[in-house]
Length: 256
Image 1 (cartoon, rainbow, N blue to C red):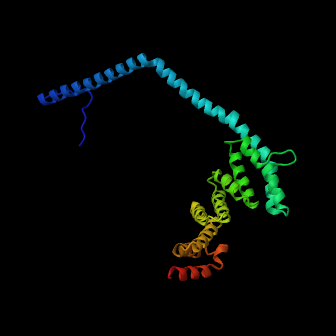
Image 2 (cartoon, rainbow, N blue to C red; image 1 turned 90 degrees about the vertical axis):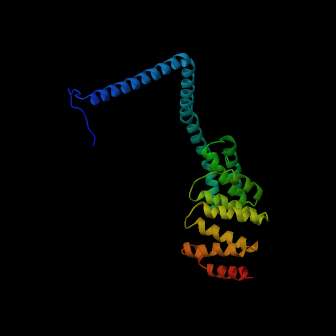
Image 3 (cartoon, rainbow, N blue to C red; image 1 turned 90 degrees about the horizontal axis):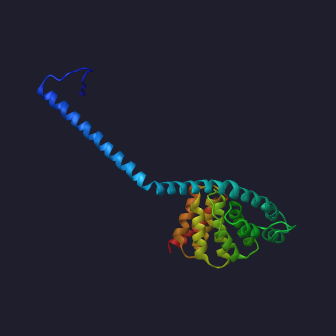
């Protein structure tokens, strides 16, 4: 049980007196140590204050510079980039939904009516989120125009954590490699696209593409795993509508 001495209490026994002396001695040592530490710290600061102030100044400049860059350079640059990209985005959307697709995709890439295209945005506004997004648009446009090498290049430069765009970019690279007759690379990107996110749209789509490519490459067991995953986890997906046919094919090939 913890004990304490009442105020005004005076030690009566020799043991109590010795205990009080020890406590006083220990307390004095603690304060002496603190005094010595404080003195050493003061001496260090006094001796090195010039360098300390320089370091503080550098840190302040970096922090304020970073804030200033974001507020007065990066933010306005991003706004300008998005404004300049507006027309190119419209061309791209019209190409997706319209009829004269090739000409619209070319306009999305190279610009028109005196406006920037996606390639201009990438070049003029490098490092901005708009330029990053322009890489996705440009790569996808090249894919639709059957320029598969440029598709791979621009889509590879696109970085995103988006639930849909991130796997779509990887999957589009896979599509380009299929057309370039590089099925091993295609399979790798389809697998990456399928595993990046877990949703009802991109996951079953790229599991199915990975499965079909795996079958072509003679990897029937891997294909079977992908097809069965679609059936078990994404039964409402479009890819699940006739998945039993592919499961049966994979099972036959896997047992050969």
